[in-house]
Length: 94
Image (spheres, rainbow, N blue to C red):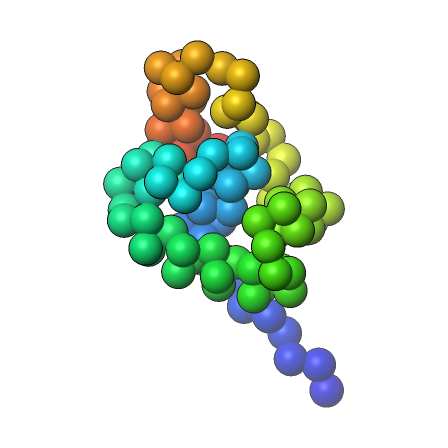
């Protein structure tokens, strides 16, 4: 009998979606107003859920599973605009 996985928590999903934008753990922590250590904890749980071992693999798997749909990539935007976008997206739940 297969054991059904628990869904990602709201915070794990937020961390994953920010990871999909290409930002660092420090930037994720800043956007979510949590510590970088807490980000690492959430990423470990996300990677376990996705059955992957690294950030790139997590993003690829997240894209395949639709977790990153509608996420705006932060790289290439001005710093002010990217933080405004990220913080707004996080508050609005993407």
